[in-house]
Length: 409
Image (cartoon, rainbow, N blue to C red; front, side, top):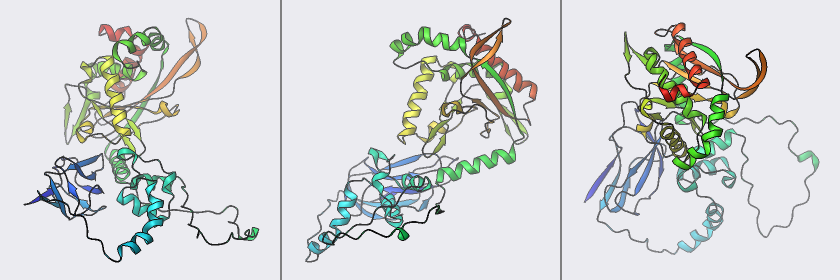
């Protein structure tokens, strides 16, 4: 019996997907729930499991094809058994001819689409770190490698050929050669570009700044960090303090937690805080749902889990959907000052930056303190400057007096 394999129902926020990698070939046996093909959306990679045991009878959509929700992509013959192809007289010759290629590719696990990119561009795939399942080198890994100035694979040399004479100096590559490469944007990067332009063109964005003395938070981490880790199995970082402070401040400033829908303003009675996570493929923003009810340990565990899933390409669409407010930490990479861009339909985003020892005046004395600049970018159509500034001051007061968060003040 033939069974159709279709694209899963995609969320409203995802219009289509691209066939990334087929894990089975026509004629190969498949098992029920075995990953058959990867679909790349503008947010995550979706796995499509086999609906039944059998044999992959037909692949209708090839790697690189764009597909929509519930579109037919393959057919499985349920209950069938894969049969080994009969040997032919040409098989030994074909095997001998393919031996060099097989030897070259066996050392690197390449996806089908990645193998095609490597062959077309003569890339040395052994120099590329794979981010696919089980360390597989994907098409996107190779494209990123090319963007960073990756080298082509060395040409194979005939085994019986005599050693060539040294090339004259004049034949060497010219000094100061200016090479260029044109590669298409990845699907995720294209979507990020669209979202950033949407934000720029649809939001009257303004940014307010403040600075925070994090000595009290640093002292608390030093005093209780070890006990916290023993009790919860996770380190106590700075991010949980900022999430807690933001969630508490959003309760007192609901306009910051709102969004615009046409001529209406939607006030959210919950704080679903998106945390910006950088990956090799681009920035993703998994959501901490009901952050106002989460403990410090809950926040740290959730962020660590999302970071691990993002690195391994395991984020699900539901992890990224929604969000009423965003926190991004450019300080992880050394950023001292920036103006983050609001992620619509949200109305505000908090930017953290690098912590630097700076001289400040405290009780009439000049002292060194761990200081951080913070930025709040917001939609000026509904959020006034006063609201934005008071929100930042609220966060500053909580972090400079972290016991306030514990007392709900």
